Amino acid sequence: MKLVLDTHTHTIASGHAYNTLNEMVRAAAEKGLQLLAVTEHGPAMPGSCQEIYFHNLRAISRVKYGVKLLLGCEMNIMDLEGRVDLALPALEEIDIGIASMHIPCVASGSVKENTRAYQRVMENPYVNIIGHPDDSRYPVDYRQLVQEAKKQGVLLELNNSSLKPNGFRQDTRKNDMEMLRYCMEYQVPVVVGSDAHVEEDVGNFTLAQEVLEAVGFPEELVANTSVDKLMGYLR
Ligand SMILES: [Zn+2]
Ligand SMILES: [Zn+2]
Picture 1 (cartoon, helix red, strand yellow):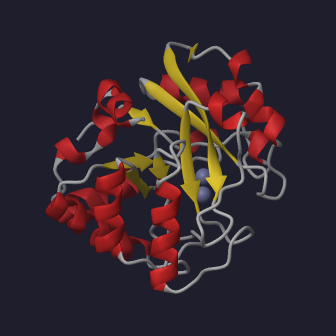
Picture 2: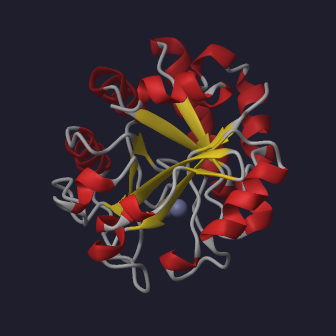
């Protein structure tokens, strides 16, 4: 399966990533990617950029080094009601929105509460992707999550960085496999994101591809195989 785009990366603007925007896009071009999304952490992540950063995204050209560029935000889910840390008018300036749970920003609830939080987040029209719902530190009901993603037209992410052996998130391979099996059962698409915090990781999908193969996941349900396909999923 050839994946031609990466929907989840960070630059120095996120505060704990280490390359510039130009370096990340150049890496994408060198690796032959057709599209790169740069999705800086929302303002509630310690050290990340403030709201004004997102408000001025129109200053940046959407094609660089021949790569189509989407500029967005990985919003922090702030509570179990599904509130996020980016508001209008900044939200109107982003091309793509990911919403994720992160340890510095939200405490886990029960399986039922976390699943409901994701459900509420998906009702936000600026959220296109649920980032790394693969972490046993935030347990969820995968059947319900997948059914809700289908209903709301939101993509669930298969996060390559989560699968690294030195990663922070827990039981990610097992959780991803469970999520992917429900996606196959209910015909729900997923998107693969590198979650690169350094240029070497742009378009690195090695571990995610291994999991897709292990469950026999069908290519037609992977949003990364063409730019048009991805754009069709972004509301
Ligand atoms: Zn994240
Ligand atoms: Zn990220």
